[in-house]
Length: 266
Length: 283
Image (cartoon, rainbow over all chains, first blue to last red; front, side):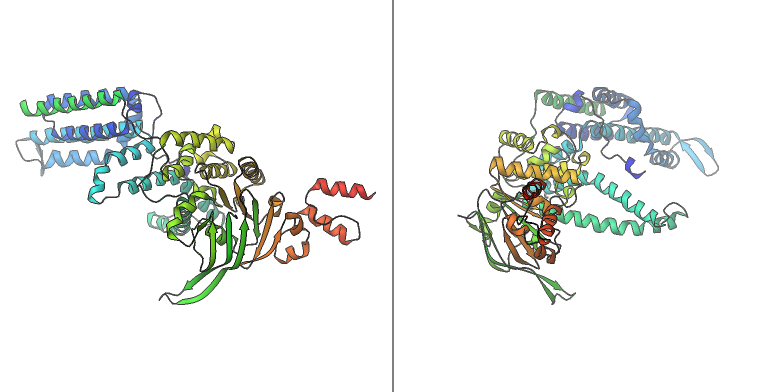
């Protein structure tokens, strides 16, 4: 049951987006998110829509697969829309009881929902088309300047990649502990929410203990293999820009310039 | 010169109460002498709590001795300066296969050690390929370690150590969590490395069947080396081994009992073939 969880929902394919350097994709996602918050009016909306459709097409991930990601934020979308709809002051279009819907409210609600939905869709292109390992590699490399202000970039990305490696192991372990306790008469399914949460405690304690033991073992194994931080390390698969990455950067810059100029001149 | 030279090695674990006062002292190693020549296959046998794992951790300088001297590859293990040199020349494989693989792809895990010691990228690729094929795991290079069996994971761990090109590899109960198939796989990989690449092997275990092909065997009990010699010399003393809570291999035990019952069977028989041969010679 619990083993069905998938994390880092990578969608394997050999599209151009999949083959891009993760740094380009991170940059692209950042620019795209920025563009979502600076576009204004219908022409801007059309521009970002065109951009999004283009990215999704390039990634060869089926659109239906991506829309699934929207379900998770449906509640947030509805709440945001409601707040914008009812609480924006201006010319009332419809009013009933204490509520009134204004023209401005309608407009800002519409744009807000579009922004959020596009945000999720756009960033899921990144996670669907990049393996978790590439993602951490790309992050380590593009965030390297932060090292200068004392942020341990290498260590953070090492932690992330180890976490990814251990998720399936810990999930399996949880399953094992659960079964062992079910076999001795534990009850995880019945009762109200609080009761069920309480029944999780005897599950979490052994899980935590074993996770700490694993962490200890792993640290020792890493030390035995001469790991002592990021300094002086080489890479088996260093990130290297290819020609297509340069082209992608240009495309991203072009896209951003277009959205920006639409905002300024229209 | 000996590759490993340990004299009167003592290691004490301190148990402290909440204020940090020493409540009790556990002497895990109590004056251990160990000499290993380059290219040797040395087995260290012992029951739980005999100090064999503590000894293994000293050989990789994961622990430092409270007393005594330890020289590895001509370098003083007590000297902070040689720490990384020693870890490079004496690699280590641990008991739990899951807790020592770092990356989520086999080949990247094997590359972890070379990456740490700053091997150039092209060289890493060569080493990864070489060490994976030396344990027969090359065709799994793109797999996730989570999909491998215990024996395969342990072979990947061995490849990960081999990729650092150490002179010696210390295996701390590498087979304890494996099924019989996995145990055989790992043992075969280790024996091949020792025979064909001349890697010094220190194999720590409590399964006596695994060490009949070792050059020398050390038996530990309560932090002391209580027996040492060739497998034949050690295994012939079945009574003594039993007193250290070790199970003598069945064949050796059978030969021992036959000998005690008055048959003229030679001492310290290790394999079934030997026993059959010596029994045939009797009649």
